Image (spheres, rainbow, N blue to C red):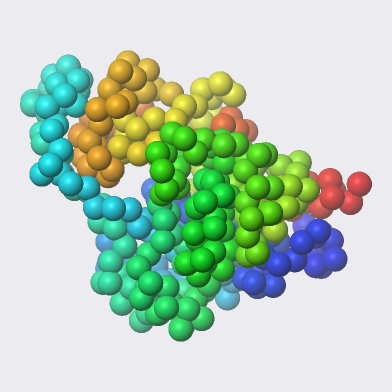
Length: 361
């Protein structure tokens, strides 16, 4: 990998803010981005990241300790700050009726009532972070409570928020975020929308990044559909100070992606993803499968996020045990077919080399 002094990058704000060599963030992906992956990315001069929304508190403490032992580079710990669902007030009759044929076919009995699912960021999590502060913490689905921001900043933790429109970016900046991910609709996994109706904020990366870059003063991180040096170079031309890349790492040797998910990515094509609420109750981009195609009529009757996941999880588990991805959330960005089976370090080397080659032209 070539040396990359600051002069080779068009914008050095992200490098200065986070102590990076390369302005690339390996995206936080729950169930995919392992501690080994995050450490490898940090040791390669980028920002590693861990998706911690589903991580038990005891495991989070272990991850913080392992990262502190293994790298001096920045690793981002990502959390959901969603509104807790009103399960008691939700009429689950329609969604349970819609899913019953799948439960019956899988010999799973009756569809259960949905349960709340993953909890949002809490003071218990904050206490764990403050006991061993990471270099960076990021939030999805909005802003945490003000006392959380104050406590983390008092410990010199840098904060990142995710925006899918200009109004969200302005709210994140006003709320104290040090940098903002501009998440285009091409991105895999959950849309980070937190203002207005999620389906109204489906702007692509090409349009979104310059709008947000013009609206805020903090560094903007482009995300969504960026897969190689061409996308990285383009992000700088749009006004971004760096990029966040997720799907490109989903087949990495350090990734904890399910083998059948990796196989689905390897055989996917460019028209195979869609945004769906069916897996979790919020819009998220996945490869198409039996659930997204045959139950598309149930998109508007899902249980609230993240309770919907409790209805799909038994189907997904049964299908995976049978060697099928019919009901598994196959998170993928629109360029998922390009994911390569390489080490994290090799993926980063290719990204950096190809980006610098493009930028030098």
